[in-house]
Image (cartoon, rainbow, N blue to C red; front, side, top):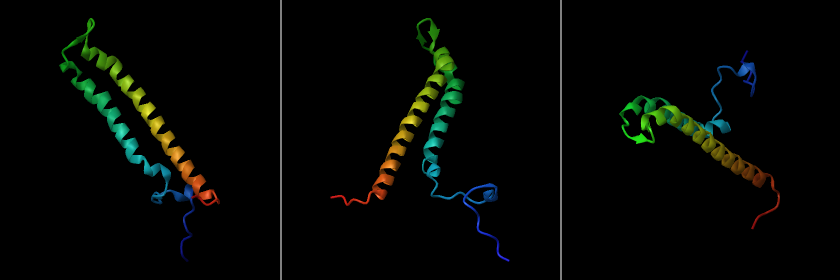
Length: 106
């Protein structure tokens, strides 16, 4: 008796490889780059902040990097992710509407 084909979703799909047509896989690399930037700014810059020896106002620059830099980078990364995903969704919607539009263009 041959096994039944795997369903598209549900608990029966556990262990089945991901379908490369999933839209989330198309921008997985972008998410990994953002994650790498976040990790570098949170851990890397904070680790080497003591070597930044100039001052901004009465505080050393290392204080600003440690106290505010990671938060500001995180906010910028959220904004970049929002902007890119909105653009991606618009392009996907335009492509879907172009495929479903029966009128000839030209």
